[in-house]
Amino acid sequence: MSLTSDQVAHVARLARLSLSADELERMRSQLSNILAYIEVLQEVDVSGVALTAQVTGLTTVLRPDVVRDGLSREAVLANAPDQRDGMFRVKPVFEE
Image (cartoon, rainbow, N blue to C red; front, side, top):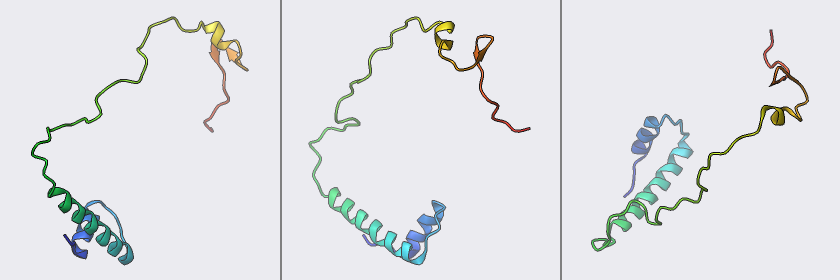
């Protein structure tokens, strides 16, 4: 399937893209090639293939969450360069 420059310009407008004439022609060529490949794929007989949404199986690679006690406030603040009233002190980041 070959797209026209007007069709590509319309899609670019919908996507709020500003394309130069060279970019428009390059996109027209590339999108036309993609659509031609999709036409080839549509010819493949997939009638015997079951519908799938996930082909690799779903397994989690994360460890299970385990609730445990965190650090004490004293341990957290032990290496703090500046602290006051049990909190970190940092330089102000707002200008007045």
